[in-house]
Image (cartoon, rainbow, N blue to C red; front, side, top):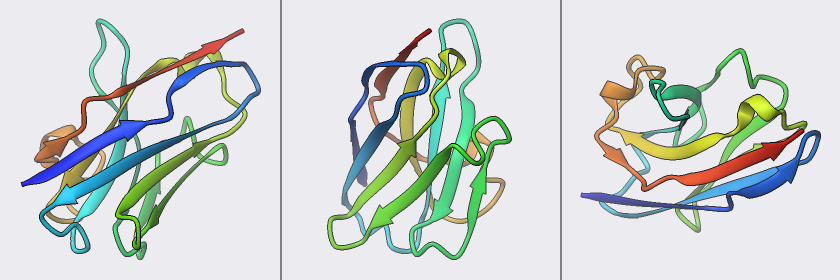
Length: 124
């Protein structure tokens, strides 16, 4: 079992920044792939970014590349998503997820553990 708890969401003006955190506990995550997804009501969950825990592989959605950065603190077992230059279209519930391996990381179905989500609202 892997438990994931997100935090750091909130309300921010367009052009601002937020940093999301995802605290992982339970089974070791050092060999797993970690991802961030987001979802708005009525739409499918959308891939944002992914990395292997050790950081040898990284992937970003085109819509966030250059603005968002996914990182991890191994000592704290915590995954981060630094979000800069936020836009109104970034408004969503953001989810942290964990997958047993790096295989099609853009697909939500490959992730077997999910956090509860944290709301990010960007006002224009």
